[in-house]
Length: 520
Ligand SMILES: *[C@@H]1O[C@H](CO)[C@@H](O)[C@H](O)[C@H]1NC(C)=O
Ligand SMILES: *[C@@H]1O[C@H](CO)[C@@H](O)[C@H](O)[C@H]1NC(C)=O
Ligand SMILES: *[C@@H]1O[C@H](CO)[C@@H](O)[C@H](O)[C@H]1NC(C)=O
Ligand SMILES: *[C@@H]1O[C@H](CO)[C@@H](O)[C@H](O)[C@H]1NC(C)=O
Image 1 (cartoon, rainbow, N blue to C red):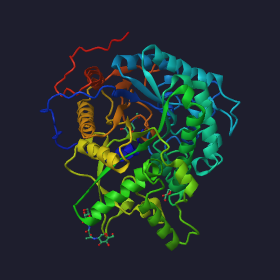
Image 2: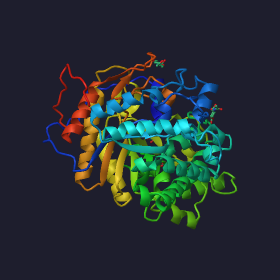
Image 3: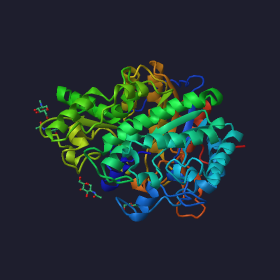
Image 4: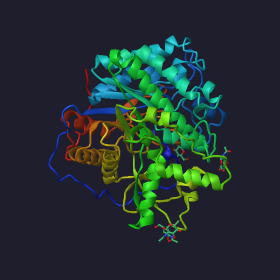
């Protein structure tokens, strides 16, 4: 899950006057035949059981045990929502919602507790857990959509440099092959890596996320190259060794914030272009663009600044022509994680150093390379727990349109979209958000975007990284105070259930006050 929501803790909510973009006057329109609805979670955020059976620590276990109070609220993911034990309840909730699929991730150190490369030391208990979960889904006709890597790297690999060590390409391929062998007969949708921008920047470029390397000049770039090659290697490996027998599809899930210019000046629209290339483009172009490779503007800017700054070569490692060919087109679909829209600008006084994603670092650095200022529109409503989670559905529409045009209309699965709140069951603002964003998606679909599915972040409240448990995204509330981690449907759960049932967004639907969840 996103992350950025941390600053929310630091800033007061700016809940501005109402939601003014209500498109409820439009007639109901159906999603196309075969369109899939789902919900999402991730291993470290829900499983708990951090040292159960023979699991070894992930880099999140280690970072958070060393300094539980970094950024906010001194809590850990040791128990989280305890899905390691409560997976039957989770599966029952999925059946209550009636969703077509469940997106969850595999904990690498749970299934391969020793390494690197010890593919023979697979954990029977770890794989048994995922088999039990998948069996629960199958019994209810729910497809698993499985993420191989959602940020919980084995600490034994972080000790060797993690995503900055080029050998991670082999380690990731070894791990993926083991997972395909063990679970691949029952899984048709694979996501290799979740939101590399987020962990490459906040984990290797900064100290917000494990492993907190804080190398703001090179961390994100070294990580980016290794992510691209690791993804492409696993894509080709699946195609040559498993696809014929298992018949699944493989993509990557990238983080795409949308940006709009503060003014219509040339500088501000250039700033939008640049930030889109430095964030999403860095991780998307090499795989999805017709000519592959890192975005031109990123290569040129980083090379020029690096030379001026006295580096022996560009801080962004090159992709060789063989690597460009290898990564280009290595996808069956694009996973899109999108939450909100932010304003951006560039002028002499554009000061990224105070901006929420990029503040607190000096040149040479990734933010200095990008050179844009960020701002919030006073016109867009914001979440009560995050000053920069904005409600601006047309930004989602514009993003989907941009991806269609830029990458030749790839098949898209929206793998995350959601709205943060505090605790509580009455979440009308989340309902408003989900409806608005689903309608924006429908508009892009009707204009030709090849969007195959949509996933709410999240099924239930989770460990939200540096926001810990103060930021809630769940359709189901989790009582983190209770030993049994009881889950209770929010109002939004009933509304999403109706969307899935009707295969349409009915803005007038109001769940009965005494609504309950039932399933077989
Ligand atoms: C455009 O941005 C550049 C670089 O920050 C700056 O030098 C220039 O003054 C800006 N132009 C305007 C019209 O703001
Ligand atoms: C730079 O742009 C921001 C956002 O539009 C604006 O607030 C600021 O006054 C501008 N500064 C200059 C020197 O133009
Ligand atoms: C990370 O770097 C920033 C400056 O770039 C510094 O302010 C911060 O203290 C560093 N964090 C750690 C944990 O060293
Ligand atoms: C986390 O800290 C914030 C700010 O102090 C507080 O409002 C919130 O209730 C805390 N959440 C938890 C789960 O402790």
